Length: 365
Image 1 (spheres, rainbow, N blue to C red):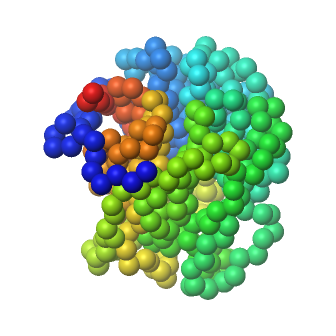
Image 2 (cartoon, rainbow, N blue to C red):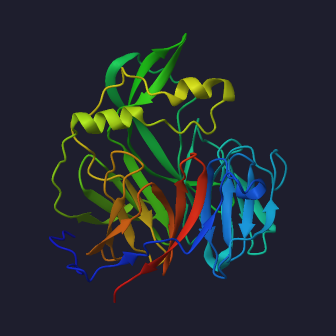
């Protein structure tokens, strides 16, 4: 499916409200309102917002007005506890699934917050990534690095393959979704050790799963493939794309931007927050930044950003792969969930403290 122009253009597209409807968090709030790296956030049908906070290893539930109602879980390895809270997904009927990357465990909670079941997944390497849950109850994950795998040293960029797997509701491995090239990396010496660094503006592979399908794409070019389980390609989605060259100013702004070091041991954070000047960069931006599926099953493709502070634009495609419109979201905002009439995500204030912000989304007919 190749689109030359959006179906809704010239001011007839969708729009995000200029100011948030609700904002939760801040350094002055303290307690449950002070987040230390948000791992995910979802809005339930009754307006409640659930936030997964890595710092406390808890899920925090807020009412529609942003008032804290309760915390769920704590740090630990027992039932309902978390060691590496790293993702949150809204399921049918307002149940939610929380992903723990250290315990390799998916915890499913009912709308009241009660733990319904936990599923531990085997056969995953280091740093597995949760990519979504399908309507049949299966989970899709990137398997992660193989333990003990040696990485060649040097400034030459490479892209190691990543295996994507689908597990059943009971945790049994169902099938291999595919094996695709991973992020463009280099391995460099760093204070008596070796560190793997992602190439600046380097290429990567993206996969997002939800409802009855998943979408996958390499951001080296603008082409997204839609699949149906287990791994059947249904269509390829394309639109015109022109490469954007990286300027010296772009490169300087990226190198000045600190990195996310959440999950890194405290004694290493100061060192790893600084970007290594020896890491090479690509001369052009990737074709896109990320993929997202909204509540209506529409695919959102984010334009590349040089820094997180910039505003984002998203191309939106319907369930048949047709380009519907392009939507702008505020600068510094990371979109986590798109509902029928809202956008939920995070942004950092001048003190680098995270806030959860809810915006209204107007969809033109």
